[in-house]
Length: 506
Ligand SMILES: [Cu+2]
Image (tube, rainbow, N blue to C red):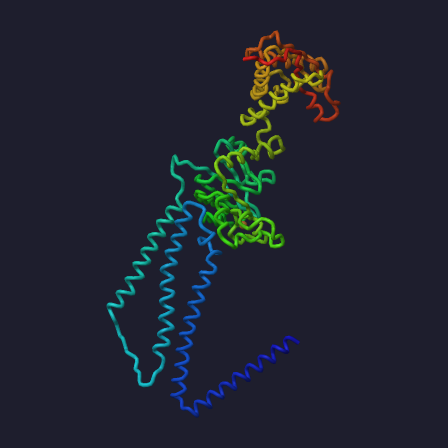
């Protein structure tokens, strides 16, 4: 049916056009060719003038009307130090191209009107004019030079890397379908090394966890934070296809290329709160954020800087959006403290942890020392006898021997600290084994191991009178010796607080 109607319309329009052609032909015959030509030229000229006014008016009005939805204008001022310079460059280019745009359109349509066909008027033939030639070569050359020089200046400043000894922070953005992994260096302020060959499900960006710089690196969740006024260097890389690291409000945009690390340096100059406050001035940002909830928060209240992927990288491309909060240094420090090391929370102690043979890493030592101090305090304060026995979970002996491994010292030093905190406290150290092997051999090994712990403590200045060391072999299993895991649980060293838990008054 629709096809039939379209066909009918097509036929009708063709008939109308043929008829108009015939009428024009007939008028030309009646009026004479020349008169028709003069009339047509006059109308064409007038219509050109009308078009000029409507077109230029439309361009100017729409540019003014929609300026607030364009980056760089109205509410979309740059929020980074270099951003203002880029915006100024765009404005300068717009002024020059605007002058040329308006000028050439006026000339084009005004000439079409002015030089329309008129009887008896003859065209002037201009073969060559050196002066004109010089002008229209010189003016564009000067303008182009100005734009290119300023552009180069801006480019060199925006693309410059950080200088040696400069104060900056570094983060890393890895693009993949369809997610950004943003890595922050931990308190050491250094990002650990990476190797794509180490990439697994548990190690999504291929961090090399034998590198101690990686131990405190953090990969925070959905919301990212950066402090205002601090120079940020972003390392950018992709895991699969091309992505693009785009922070529109900061005029930051850089391709994320698989196998080719890129970078961008910028300094955020406005906090999220400051930017929201500026948006408040614009009526369109005072409308409700959710049109279905007119009394709810306004658009400016819900504004957030965003990180987008500006490369069409696949069907989930849109979901790479992340929220970026620019905050004061104090707020940033508070957020930073709450972030956890990816390695310590996700990898440590799991099957693919390359540091499995080390019981305690230097980064874990202060965390464990704190936890140890707290559990001793709890045991001292408890009135329940069973709470007085604690396990030394992070000491290890060489297989079949009573020689303490090197990294057992962390846990033992925590025990030294506890004994110094409670100078009246004495303890009983107890060695236990599993039921593998001869009971007599187990018994003597457990005694030797308990003694080894006591010996270490005395070398660290603890009086031998405060220490008792006993070995129980396999006689006191904590759990039945029926699985390898349970046997591991039974191979343990414990200590029991015997009394005198008073704090050192000093
Ligand atoms: Cu992408």
